[in-house]
Image (cartoon, rainbow, N blue to C red; front, side):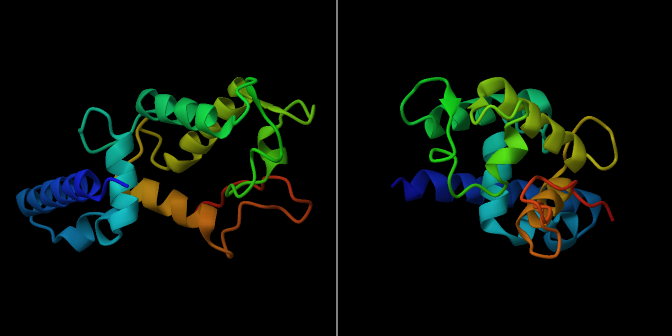
Length: 158
């Protein structure tokens, strides 16, 4: 495990958030909910390829494609329910054509839909605050992304 590079990246992002907050006259905790959660901050930073402080789908897409390839244990180009185990959303939410497999295009299409849902101000980017709220909705029991029938429920908006 490479803790030092991750810690350095987290520290770098923390410094950037603090500096940006100081320029705006806000505290880091009010600048972004992600500032209060090191794991969320590190994940956001990892996805923010150009380091501009917001995510675009063009930045998120390669990470999702790499994630798909990592999950595809037998490298056959599709995910099975077994390969998909322990994910935040159920397999059925990604299997758009209901063939019992999730292709790369299905996987990316679902993640692009989730990206659009996270972009609550509809500016084409996901800010750290939008990212954090979307992640919290995805993981919280009250904002569960699973409908009673086990399929994906729409992400709730506030």
